[in-house]
Length: 179
Figure 1 (cartoon, one colour):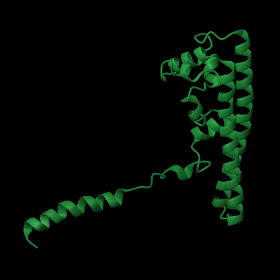
Figure 2 (cartoon, one colour):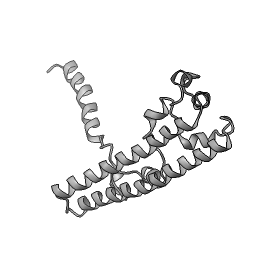
Figure 3 (spheres, rainbow, N blue to C red):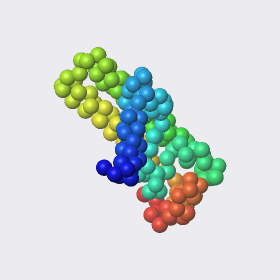
């Protein structure tokens, strides 16, 4: 091998070798988590009943969320009746989201524990993953359904104003009318 070829090979091979040596899994450090599959922030979001983006299909298609409607009540000129209905929709959604979030976290903890103690079996795995999937589906339904309820409470003009205040298409909700 000639000297230039050798030098070229070293310039190529050494950085590749160094990269390979220094590569870590994106999971590195997560082995210290209480529940390996969930960050502390994710656990908090589940336990506090936050939406975590589960109702994005509704939110971005002109179906306001009760939490944000309450936050924007003044700008939306909610009537006393609308405020009460929105609060009721939020309270119902939030209570159910907290209940389901606690169950999801408990199931994730159970999943983690069975792996940590080397007691996982295919039967356990199928049951727990199925439970988690069902609970996550119920949680998403809970959040999406609250948005559906809000569409019945607000006028088309209020929906359009909500979209504008939230930074979505200005006035687009008026095209879709009240459902």
